Length: 134
Image (cartoon, rainbow, N blue to C red; front, side):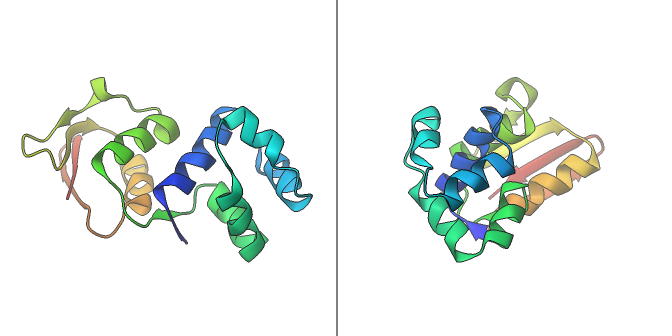
């Protein structure tokens, strides 16, 4: 399912605060997600809307099965840091400013990253290094 970059941030922030799907689902189901908002320091109303549309799809999304509708370069770098624990020291920015290169990751991580990217992003592997660019 496609979600916004902000919704992806919200999910990844909740995960960094060690909230499980069951924790979040219970709060959303009982309309008591405002406590989560305080911890995450953001308005989680968009997640409530996602949950209300389809609790089953929300579970998949929370577990990482999502695609970001429009991914910016800075958004991509943040998702790499939050979700994949990949920091800027582990790759280089493309000279054109439209992506990253020289990211040494395995094929499984490459596939996981590729699935979240919006359709305008491209992926190129050169040996052990991967380039993601627009």
